[in-house]
Image (tube, rainbow over all chains, first blue to last red; front, side, top):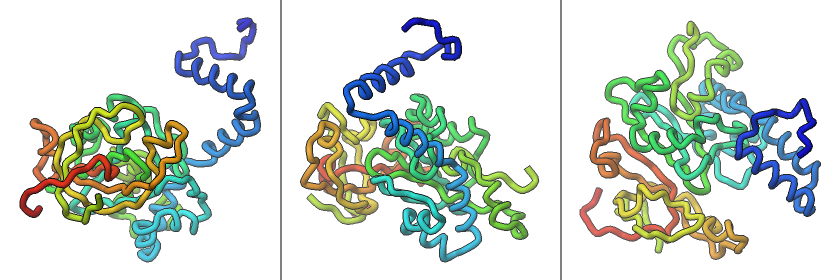
Length: 202
Length: 97
């Protein structure tokens, strides 16, 4: 490294340095090509929690779609023009008046990337991954959410070939909102279960 | 070995190294089979460039949180579901759920 690149970040974490070294090696050895790397980046950047919000808002508006989302989430996503072609299974679990779900991957950072893009950093942290299974209620409190009295907390540890997303409950007072307005209430955290959707006033 | 929903199972306390998809905190713990997710190539072999065949059954297995953690904070109904491959499970003999 010459150190004469003023635009490069000056504080590179050891992980970032390692991944760049690996990338450089893979390119040099012809395992990967530069366009393939760019395609990978574009794939990730084209996906975001807005996709999850659209699925949720449609399910709130349309019972038939909700049924499809809960039974065959990949097909439901395809119907809205998304490309859930990732080989992993995609499963949506429903929050109800009696059950609140929370998603974690204790082993690594499994996440429905084909739909939602990259997970937030906290989702990948050791702290979240270890505490979400052991003390999910304390974790949710720290995110500012506490399930109402009598609601069971159900944690899904996505260890293998399934990626999970939550269908949260529709907030009260949203009867007059259209699908687009509903989608704006659905936060990324509410799709993971550390929170619930916003209410229209908030 | 195949299981039916409701079957009581125990997670093997194996210390098999490598790309295992069974978290340590569940080893030796007892739960129940909630459902069969499907059959998949074994990720423990795929990770090393092997075929992963034959495909293995993957089960959604449920646990009572109170059975996992002595000091769990929350009602007895709180649960945890984890996806576990058949070769990490053994039948557990006891009464029905």
